[in-house]
Amino acid sequence: MTKKASRVVIVVQARMASTRLPGKVMMTIMGKSLLALMIERLNMIRHWATVVVATSQNTEDDIIENEAGELDIPCYRGSEHNLLDRHYQAAKRFEADVVLKIPSDCPLIDPQAIDQALEFFFANANKYDYVSNLHPATYPDGNDVEIMTMACLQKTWKEASRPMELEHTTPYIWENPDLFRIANVSWATGLDYSMSHRFTIDYQEDFDFIKSVFEELYPTNDDFTCEDIIDLLNRKPEIYNINSMHAGVNWYRHHLNELKTIQPGQTRLASA
Image (tube, rainbow, N blue to C red; front, side, top):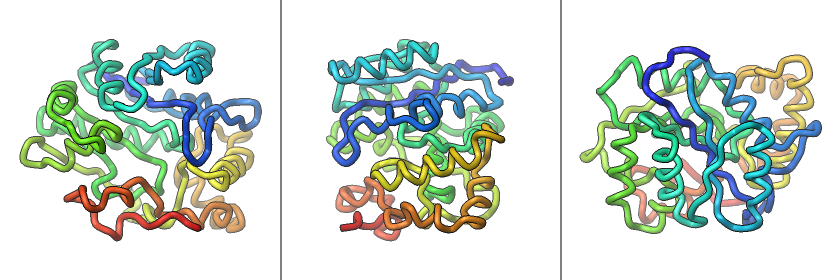
């Protein structure tokens, strides 16, 4: 990894509690936890960065702290439900100038997607407080990258108050373009697979999908890209079909009455 300038800290929020798939980050594929596989992919980015796992103080999350130790990754433990505070405190603890939010439910995240967003952010130094590839999203779901200055995160931490803003960390930023300088990076292919392809994990079918992708690609190409996955799915549509019933399902669906910048077409109801 190169291009060391500002201190870049990638915060990976992870905990064992999950309504639909408890313990998902510690589920294993080929003898490695999903968290471990994801950390491998984060460490493939070209930019210099410190990866930090941020978990809760709950006893059930001791296993995540232990896993971080096994991976030689620092771990911060904080609030269970106020993820904004946990994110801010982790970034502060590790003296971040630039903070990345990468959800732990994105084990297939493409390192090139992270680099693309970082390159845009640094090429436009001091122009933007927040850069993401989510507003609007174009990558397959599960390639979520959000970059913010520490000053932006601190302002958000001080001012955000609604439960949704505390739980999801960044809505206060992208919902207030009058307060922050915001930019978005689109998938370089020009395609939009955000509602049709799902590379994230929230259901058992998602795990089965992710497991199939890793087993197909990882043994011969551990740094496979988003395009490699798409190629695999075109060759083997039965893999795409494993979790296609959940494509487009995301947390926005619970807050459409609160979110000003999200339209109904950017989410859909969960499958029965």
